[in-house]
Amino acid sequence: MDSRFIIYGRRTCPYCSHAVDLLEARGIKNVFFDFTEDPQAIQEAKSFYKWRTVPMVLENNVLTGETKFIGGYDDLYERLNSRL
Image 1 (spheres, helix red, strand yellow):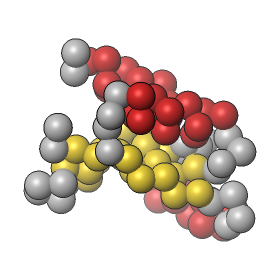
Image 2: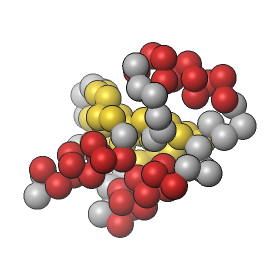
Image 3: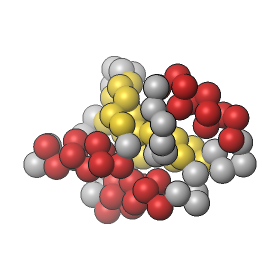
Image 4: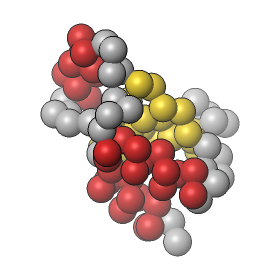
């Protein structure tokens, strides 16, 4: 797989933890940015992506650099299952 997933969230968020666990269970590269201590940064990310909740999941093609917004945990789950 040429993709890795980037997750913006909080370590206290169960759906953020589920997203990381899902990716790791499938052996998929991921980077988690924890904004627990920086609520302003998470608000800016929510505004930028026009998304109201965490996690915010992005897929990054490591070969081309293209990055696209996927959505939240449910969207990530659906995206991974559509690949099977």
